[in-house]
Image 1 (cartoon, one colour):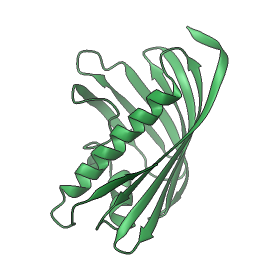
Image 2: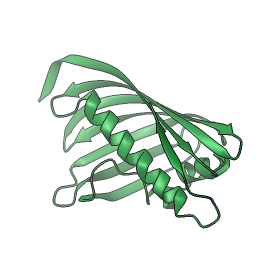
Image 3: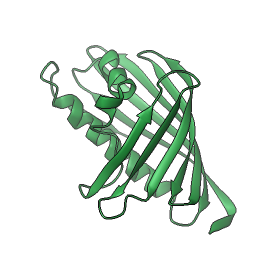
Image 4: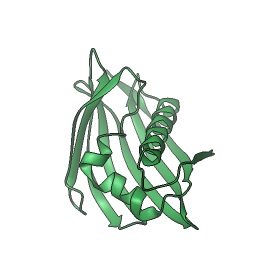
Length: 166
């Protein structure tokens, strides 16, 4: 059931990926095969059942995920702005089964810092339904970016290291 009152929140999550340049981080978002290895918000018992993307301005993306026994969450969105190695902006909705729970404008910025990347993720959302809250979103993005860091560390062509910034 949808809430009567919409809840608005902006969440900013930052990471620094040591020894990994912006083109490498950008490629991890742009290449659906790479993204499927790390883009999952839940715990170790969660699964990514579907991920499709047409990575271009005007292109669409879709994902379905959740706990292994019931991957009931899904999202759809559209890419609004893409500047290679610098910025990705998308807008989309999140759902739990048939209930739309939120709408989001997402901006991912990649800033070169020597041979490293400072990633700033800004999630501007409005929450419609009980069961999803800004604290859940912050936690989900934290888990996703931690997985991205582990994915980047696993690449033998790059040095290891990720640090969290708030």
